[in-house]
Image (cartoon, rainbow, N blue to C red; front, side):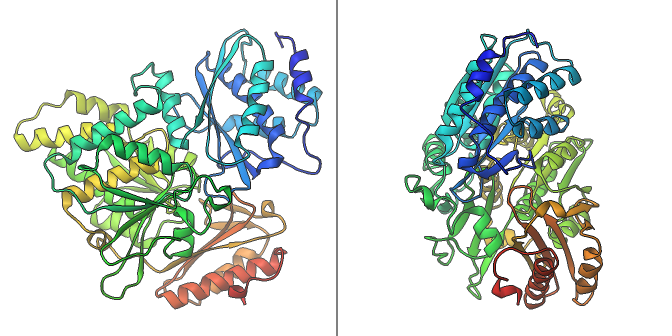
Length: 548
């Protein structure tokens, strides 16, 4: 180790690891109750600096958020130079650093990481930081920056304060592309998206106002700023659940996760006839739409599957109109994707569809294999990726007709509208609004492109979620032994039944997903499976009434 560790040793003493707590760098980084994370925040500083040095001084991001979790929770995740998730081969080192008991163990893991990754410690390091509105955020930022300061003069950092998660990903990529991706500021983000959106809706009749549930999180002030930049004449939004002052209201009975899992209107959203509604999550990287059916007044959900199908349809039509039929357009899903959505993509749009494990990092990497890759998790987290071949084709294409010229211009603007670093609720919202504006569709018309199979997602709180291991893109249990056989037996009793059980990567729960031919059978299957998991895996607390 080529620099003096004495300052690091002194600083780390302020942030001892809590006893009897084991940390794991999971699907979305570290995530736990916020007051347990100061020691982790300090150690993430070590990881980010070593990652930056390994990447020849390129900027690394650290985002502090727990997304859709309750306000008491917080988390930290590391953002790689292109704005993507941390290289998975570094995750074990992240976990080991977080669980180091003292400065000696921290130094030992640092040296092992330096050796394993052949890191030149004389290289500079630069880290940028963002956080959401959670009350534990400032204390965790201080722990992180105390580490960065202690690591010496070759380390610099910039704290961008309160941001959405996608905004930090955007800034990281902008810095590392020296502005080629955009201006590396919050204002640059707004300018890029607003300019592209106005270009794409130009000449089309505007839609009715959109009610946006902001989950009482960071999305409220940031979306308000973006909407002002776009202008009400181009995008009319009404923000609800926008109280960021009352910390306990964050994600409480509102937001994208609530709407998706409860399949109901969030607090303060009436769902009036013809009202167009959508919901963000706490850090504004998820988006779902919803409305009240005009005929039977039932709640209707348009989740990530629906957004994926809409985007894939629009992009496919544009590439054909632009004469770019050689571009390979594909869609990536997880096991949570509704069976009807997969059939629609394959049979109606005739697009290749890949299924991968849950977690954006898995979808993102698979989507990179297509020239234009559309990926969305059913929870509303996703984006569209345009690879080098696609952007080169767009830059070189020469229009042979006015219609072809228009399609090419729209595709070029679409590249700027989409935040390709990570799923971004704002970018996705604008994408959906562009497509609906072009088609002049209501939410009901969009919804009827295909009909979802009834589905239900339930959470089961268990003693140890790590006791659950899966294979085959999360669709089959390997452990606990014998549980998959019981799941299969139960599923076989229901018409059109499909179900799987997997441990959450972001919460201390096990998730049960079920589909069936009708709502009653779907709910029955989901709740019976929930009870089965609760009983066989040592569920915590009282058995939920719906599992009885």
